[in-house]
Length: 350
DNA sequence: CGTAGAATTTGTGGCAGAAGCTCAT
DNA sequence: CATGAGCTTCTGCCACAAATTCTAC
Image (tube, rainbow, N blue to C red; front, side, top):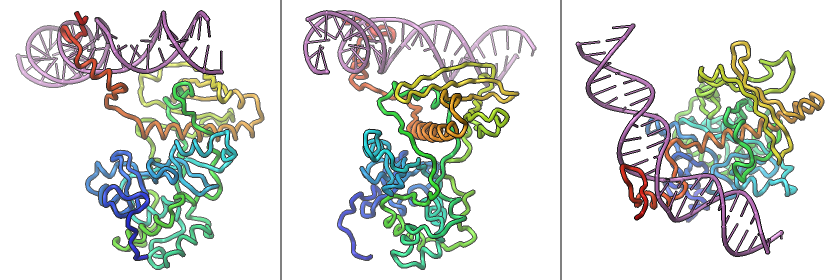
């Protein structure tokens, strides 16, 4: 494919002539793989930027959801528009997507993009379409399944406590449990992704030993330094009640005990969160009312869905978290700056 | 149910003073 | 270890326009 497209549908913000397939939130930039590597290999700070695929629908926002029914990746807004409960599409199989950080090799990128069954070697040697065909067919099973994007089993305290639907108009939709076939992770632009990865592979020395080293790849799922999170069933096996456990790092919290009952009118599911010192391991437990009253199998299923939903909210919040001062109303700022003051305090106009 | 008006709440920046921290004695 | 000086960081205060909520029709 040597014919040069005049203007790509979504041009790379850096080079301008390649098709952007990634989005870097930190830079607010749409990038192709080549420029992504160039930009984010500059120094360690840049390499920490989390990059995600670009939304297939709006081409303008980072994708957070993969719809395997449509084979497309969508940002939060587009996902809501396409899959909100009032539409028949709401039954589509979807799962959360996560970005990656660092400067992964082509082999690692292949794994991240869901081409885990493609080696870099085969990518280089295969004709243009075959790799994609292999991907589409999903013929190979086994190891590759280990290297697709996966959902981390963690939630954070603030997510679970303050993510009520009342605080914002957006309510995270239910995301069904991870499907068996999780290879399709790159949406509708897989051909372009493969093409760019192929070009990238040409400029990268072939190192078969390096092929698929998930441990080297930072996909944003590393244990969060802010929280130690343990799989709930490991801790509460004796009770066999589905729970999430979040262990806050602050020792001062360890004496703190509270019980919060959260009623969500939209979901009609009541949750009880309990912060207790659990045998030296302070933890937060969340129980659903339905889980307490329904058979265990059904409770497990519900928990899985809620877990994914909480997980999605957590990821979104983590990505959009801002530590700098945020001015909500510029007009008020302008007004405050021009206001009469006495020793720093606002004074009356007269 | 929709609209208009009233009532209430929110958010804004610079300063002073309190609180916390480091270091020398 | 206790104390004090010097420095840094945090917090509350102020007026009022804008935003939000409530109420009456």
